[in-house]
Image (cartoon, rainbow, N blue to C red):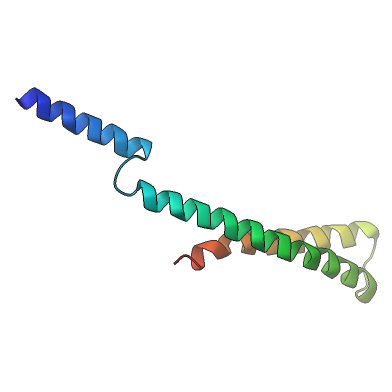
Length: 92
C-alpha cells in the first residue's frame, strides 16, 4: 500500500513539474494574454518609434548620423522594454 502512495506522489510531482497540475490552466491563460498584449502593444508602438526618430532627426541637433542612430536605438529599446513589461501590469 505504501508503494502505491509513494508512486502517486511521484506522478503528481512530475505532472506539476511538467505544468499539468492545478495551476496549468491559469498559467496557459496568462501566457496567452501576455502574448496578445505584447503583440498588440508592439504593433501600436512601432510607428511611434519611427516617428519619434524622424522627429528627433529634424528637431534636435546631433553631432553626427551615428549620434542620431544611437540615440534613436536607445529610445526604441526603452520603449519596447516598456511594451514587454506592460502586460504584467494589465493582467486580470
